[in-house]
Image (cartoon, rainbow over all chains, first blue to last red):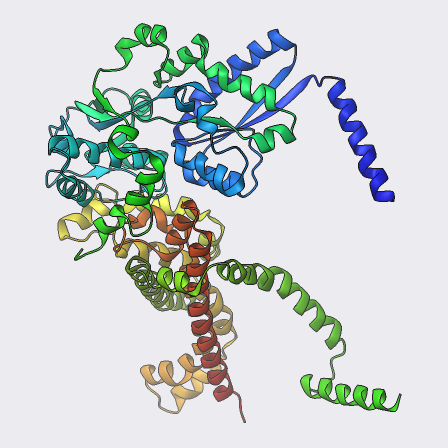
Length: 335
Length: 291
């Protein structure tokens, strides 16, 4: 009896709080590794816009880490209003395992719920002493390649698929030759970090390796941090169109009463302002107008998507990265 | 009533045999606290591992814990931990000996340095060691021409684990060595023992239990170590992946049952090893005690 009373009381206060239209909202954006700088800018701009529109302050907290690790945290109960991860497979996992958002989440926003894209490029030492121009150069013996472990890093999965896709296209879709190419590539990898930032540190701070396979935005960030006298960005002729998706986590957003503002936050990413902030942080914009404005920033290269070459993430994950998949076979002797 | 009282006396008898007679009061409250505390802090979290493992089929568990990649990681984890424990015993004994038996300026400082590996976040240790031992690091650049690679090889794993494990041996041996009666050595000497005999027959038996304790602690710590090792190991499948890393990787692939299965395998094996060491230690103690 007492308990029902207490619940009733708290419900009452809760409704009272809603009716009073709270003057400040807290949102949690759980994101992957290299987006720290991007979302700092986005959060500030969005808060300003939301304030003028509704008069309410929005405070967006960010959490960063390897994409898989972040997804697992949400599955285990981290109450994210929004997830912005490295690949759709990780958000699919949240939908499937925690049922925190509907399975068709990707159709709720334009462009497969991906407001910006990126790709995989090479970061090399100043002067490019090993003459690395394209994918073929990084599988040569004696070239040391730095990339994270695809089992734990989203960026590394895109890099792996970029290499695989390149080899497929070069060898008329010969899977065996693609596998051989990727095997030779990983023979050149002396250390597998667990996330993209870890690999960047290994390459940049510890001076290990001749080439880093990197997110485009991460490569330019490293270039700015380290200086043009230390490293260079090399853009291969062909690479993968990496699509890091975003989604509202309905279960938690609704629980916090943040459904509306969370949706507006993601929609803001698609606006001209949001796209410009993305472009300034080296994420490729979707909006034609912004893309044209920042064309000089993004070198032209041939990009293929995971859907056209690999048939989507679920299939790819199973074939390449699950236990016993192609990536494991690369390291298992005699197979 | 009668039956009840006989049962209670029987229970009382059993309790009596469970608790050996002692003049020290307060056994039951103290034992109760110990049991509750150990359950809360150790047993409950550990049994959670086994419960989670049990959500999967035996077949899946067996495939996971015996897959070539995982087996290779056991080899590295147990091998490197044993090696690091061994190195810690040899070097740790030497350091303890110097700290106990000699007086020199700055001794207090050296003594305090020993504990630093305890206090340092292991990730910091890992990054520092990696920077030192890579091919262009301070130490690594002199080892590279000799063909010795440390960072990103199993040797690097041993280096990191030795760093982590060193204080355990020193801190176990130090007090025992300090308590050891030096008159025993003098007596041995006056009875005509050589220095080697004094060491092997007088000193070593005294500190053997402490060395074993130190080894067990260093070994157990090394086996579970994650933070420092992942930086220096290179983490290449089949070559330099430690078992705790595989557990983390499995978690990130949402394979909870697989992760806990490996954890359980690691736990059972180390429990058996530690139990063995404890039994060994008791034997050596009994051997020392006058009958």
